[in-house]
Image (cartoon, rainbow, N blue to C red; front, side, top):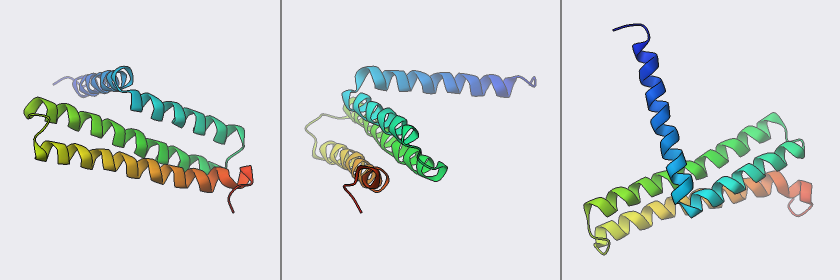
Length: 124
């Protein structure tokens, strides 16, 4: 194995990952909404002079929501491939995955209230 083989493998893996992100962006409305909200929140945090810690917290929160949305989407695709949509187990799995996204979004709203609320004078 040449010294470049591991690097090439990492590069190919990154290309697959970027392809997945592009697919999610093109095909999933909720992914686009979450991504737009994330970009807006991060830009606003930067414009309002959030501390490094606040920006890290905001970035981690954004990442949790985006990750949850992507995992939910991938699970839905797999389940649609494997089983009928009306199967009770498939429905339950999809509902649980959607619930995970909802929890991530609710948590991000809570973090947003703590970070943005004092600057807006509406919280604390």
